[in-house]
Image 1: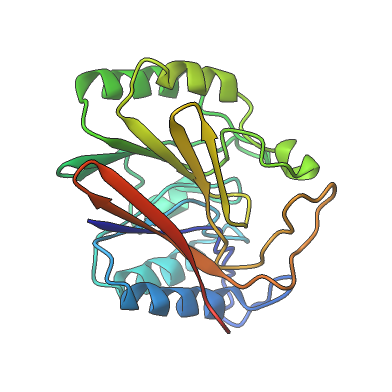
Image 2: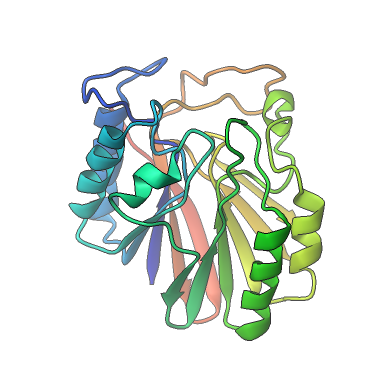
Length: 240
C-alpha cells in the first residue's frame, strides 16, 4: 500500500497566479506528475490547498488530484474554507487501508494561523483508537511538536500536550503526518514518528528565527509505504 502525501499548495483562483517565489498551480502539477510515476494507491493532502480561499482554487485542485486516478483525501489548513472544500469533496475523519488506517484531524481555528485539535475531536479520536487496534497513521495540518523554527513554533498546535496524552494508551499509532511547515521534517515523540512534508508551493527555511523562504529547496512530496506492520517513508523533490 503506497500513500503519497502532498501539502500546502496555496493555490489561487487565477491559474497563472504567483506566490512569493513561484507559480503554485504549475508547481502542484509538477509534483503530481512525479506522484503519478510513483503509482500511489492513495493521495493524502494535508491542508492549505487554497491561498485566496475561493471555490475556484478547490476546483483547480480537485481536478488536478483526480487525474492521478487513485482515491484522494484532504483536510483543511489554516488558509482553507472547509465549506468550499466540501463543494468538491468532503473531508473525512478516517481512511480504511485494510490492514492499516489513517485518522484525519481538522486542526483549523477560524481566522488564526495556529491550530488545535479541540476537546470534542480528541474524545472522538480516543473512541476511534479504542475501537480498532490496527496500525494507524494520523494526518493533521499543524505539527504536534516543536520543529525548531521560532516563528513557526509560535503558530503550531496549541493543545499538543492534550493530543499526546490522548494517544498515550494506544500503541497502534505509528506516525503522524503533518503539513503547515513547508519543509521536510522527521522526529519522534516517544514511539510515534512525526513527519513533515515539503510544500508543493514555496519552501520555508528550517531552523529560522523569523519567517524566511528557502529559495534553494524545491517542491516535493512524501512517500509512505505500508507493508504488513512496517512503515517506510521518504521525500521526493521535483525540479522545475
